[in-house]
Length: 411
Image 1 (tube, helix red, strand yellow):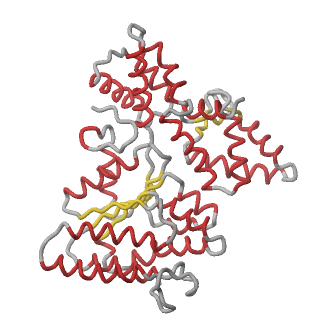
Image 2: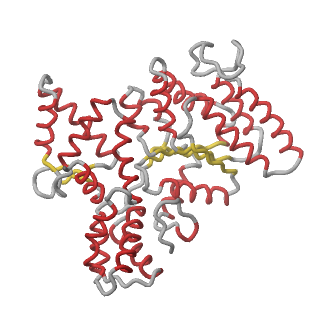
Image 3: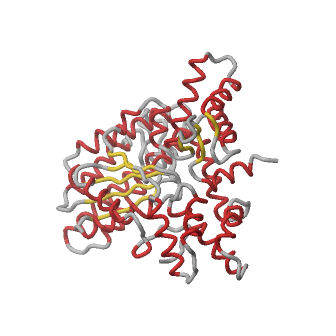
């Protein structure tokens, strides 16, 4: 097994989630999937494993990454381009006809008006009677229905695209997002081709948080919601042992256990990056027991300029994307408070911070605000609820992130 800490993994390097991939593949027989979770927990690797299984089953598969899209036209551009590349790989008269039809649709995409709020937000050389994006989107998917094939469309980072729309269109952004999600829930599922096209949607910024914050939770109810839990302790230890074997490093059970404990929330990327740094320290400190280098390993990966530092910054920036500025500031204050100790902070003390920062709020209002943020931080894997002491504490799930957060917010 290769020590890969960053790029999505495939083939023999895809470890520990074959059963999860097969489970998602079964779901796709009947439902579309929404796969959410923080960055660097293996969503892309899992999605590509699902695509590989689906492809073996005879389906056509395409992948689009829409994080850079700022509007509905950008989404359709990405989809049309991916489908064009897929069609270009097939030969025969039928596929030639499909390519011609797709080319005509591509021209319509180039002259779309945006948002569906009149003809004032047109693109390029569009006239006042330019197509609405939803109509073109339906026609694009109906084109696939003309084929005797099943398709899996993997859409990565859809939530970021939707946040981009809201951020860039303060007047109509929320309405446009609701319309996009309603289109996906209603129009796409009502197409005659719906049974031939399945969607796997993922994102590192919470779509569930977006829809709940803007009162449109109903728009994603048709998606089968899945998350990606960390490895079990035995599986995490097995990964470290296999990596150690691959790199001829001797790690006894105590060292393996210590490394997994040092991560605390054993997602494969973080296990891989800690092992990668440990390898470097072992090489630089010959004769030192690996067990004695694990704490230093964690300290190194949380320092500025190290590869993982940029990933940890994403945990901070995603709050700014998901939440209003005042709410993001309060969430960060709670995280600052809970980061000081590995065991976290008592719920009552965190609630007191909310009350202190919102002195005009009633007790019920302050409690509701805390619960709202608490649920977001739990759902997005910043926190775990820990009752082991007999008093509920909220603590960081990922220990390196806690130490990074505490270091960054300390003088």
